[in-house]
Length: 38
Image (cartoon, rainbow, N blue to C red; front, side):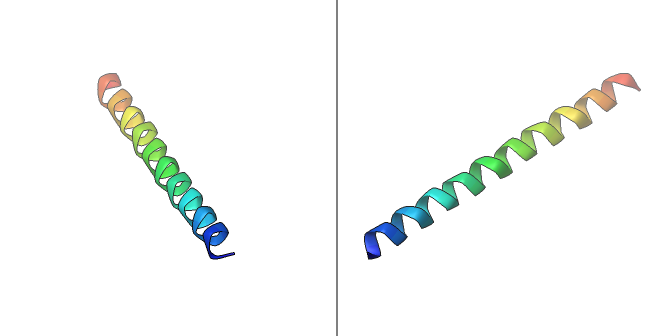
């Protein structure tokens, strides 16, 4: 039982990390595009 919980916790933490990384990449690309337009 504990191993299942640990597996789910690890998967969720990895997913959150990937989502935050993707958000940062998208935000950085958008800000760079805005700077280019100016």
